[in-house]
Image (cartoon, rainbow, N blue to C red; front, side, top):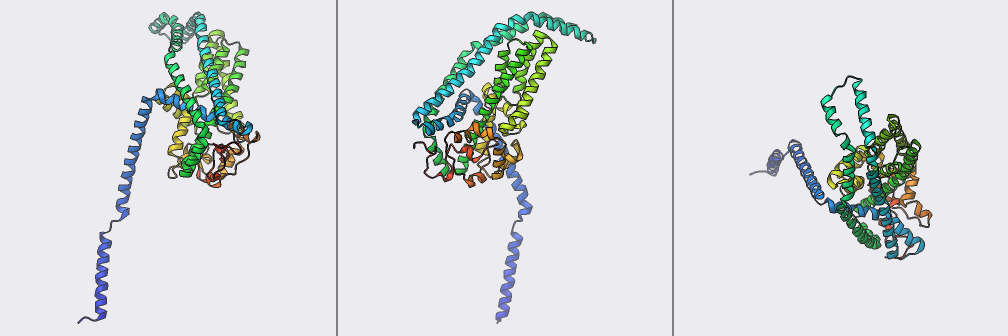
Length: 459
């Protein structure tokens, strides 16, 4: 008869056997987890790339609609502080403020496209006058090459036979652009129509943002930062683009370069294209200087434009506004290539706002991938969701706060908003230097039922 001790020992032995068998049958995660986890991550990465390519293909297919709609959205974002200021400062009804904001956008668009049209027609009228100058310059260049023993008789003869067609081809190309007004008219019609409906929607945007903040505060703050970043980018680019264009106009007038006003307009428009815009803006006036005054004038144009742009963009602009784009030059350049290919010519102007929107949707609301901000931000600190980073950006960009509404409208009667410490720690800027106060045109999470406009009438 088994004693209690032996039964206990037997039970313990059987328990040990079961435990041992269980341990032996258990899978070691270190042995299999690495392979399966790596394979799963690879599959997810491939699926993500395929989905991105499919999405870009769809956007490209409907680019004639998506590009003007997104452009109109940018314009409404830019003018939204004016809407709030009219309501708060002068007590305007929201519908009247919306109408005034819409008129401001339409006037700006008219001036922008009118200046471009004027420049194109001025070129069409002026280019034929320089056909003989171009042929003379070409022959002088061939003579100079012959001094170094360069003999390309067959190619030279072929080019000489067609050199007179170069200017006429350029003129015909410009005439083709001017005559293709149907596509431009359709694009403008879409922009104006979408602007109208977005202006109507802007009258209730405060309540909509308040609801989103209550349901999904992280995504809401990311979108608010996107709006502040887009506004900053367009305003800063426009202000300093005008300054550079005026300086270029004066410099070209001093040199006596023909069509100085046309090249100033080109410099202003190309300023909206990051990185490559300067190259686009400097080549035509350089060629005109070469035709009108020779190599020395062309060299002076290149040197003068380079000095003006370097001083303004590398020294003056950062002192007043910090970094208006908020991403590295590489990301900026790749954005231009990508969105120009996807959205067409208008995509070159919308490259940075489009990249900021993708970043606000995919990166900023997701804590697991928010580290990407530190890789693509203009400075690594701008990618960190810390109060110190926000304060550092605000300290070096006081004019940036003024023109984007966080400082200027406060001086015009806007009462300060209590900052939400949690939002500063939870949000990574969508466009670099974004502070809590920059989003103060919209409600914070702790705003409760207070009016978004801080003194204006309720929606």
